[in-house]
Length: 162
Ligand code: FES
Image 1 (cartoon, rainbow, N blue to C red):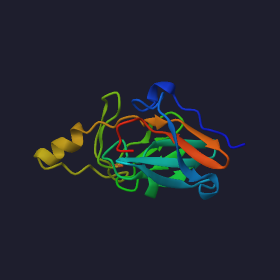
Image 2 (cartoon, protein in one colour):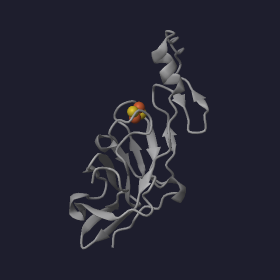
Image 3 (cartoon, rainbow, N blue to C red):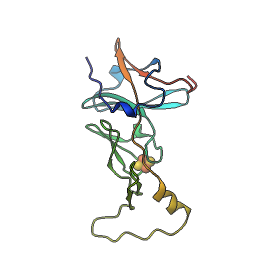
């Protein structure tokens, strides 16, 4: 039997707790360490076979929505390919802020990354700088998963064109 990675129940995606399960992928197509995108209508879901089990979340980085399915997995931590943000699949939280800086989920501010020992370059004032500063990372949101007869199923809320 394949383990399922537990996640904080309050981080279930809206409508996911009571949603019907839909077939997503043969378990054989998601070996340990794999990340895959599965699309249901307009909803892109990230399926992960982490070291602690299967888990499904949005295939949208909680920073600026890049596809995490083309990122990298290290244990239970997924790294985004766009700004190197790293997110813990077991807690939904931030392990490493994106290089662009911005706001943690609780609103704390983190400046733009700069190499150790160097002074950060001052950002030119303007809307792009403001947007980076005000972008608040969300915590990951999850979809229940199960395995039935060797097929991974995901609970997909109604209303996603499925
Ligand atoms: S979009 Fe993922 S870290 Fe920025």
